[in-house]
Length: 172
Image 1: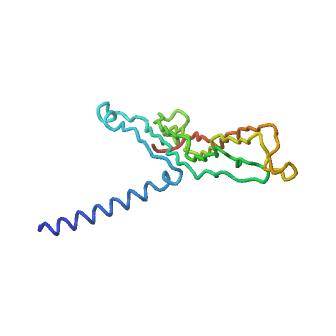
Image 2: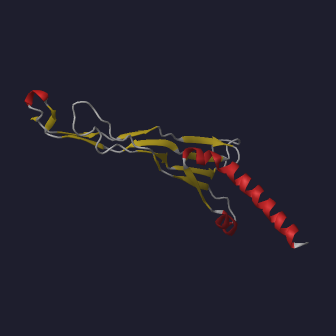
Image 3: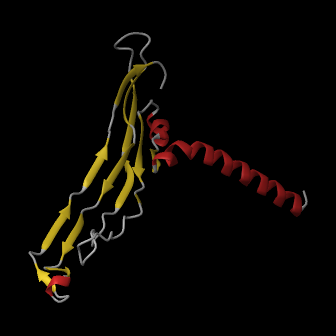
């Protein structure tokens, strides 16, 4: 086989493998997690028995665009001096499927527990400040008036809906 033919064949096989890998990774990438399988095949072969299937998912947090300072009438310093930063990601997921020796009946070959990765949305705390001066007052020769200083913390936010599945069924 010529080297150009081998190179073309390798490029085609690489493209097909990348397309298949991307199609298989689409559900995990939609949530922003990376699947982590636990390889137990070697232990199954060396022990000559069927072991549980175990895996997990690790979240990939992605920061969002913070809302910048917002100018408000009557304030010298804009609102949201330290803006809140949104971060989205996922809670880690895990799955376990273990063989079951027909204890509950002939139709049940496995026992499974899984906690799928779920979306997680957080917003970091923010800070609002204002000076102890008002804007220039035309009735006071253009000088600002005194007022009490203001400081406030915007509360952080955490939103998620976790879930879990428990099942008995045929096949592993």
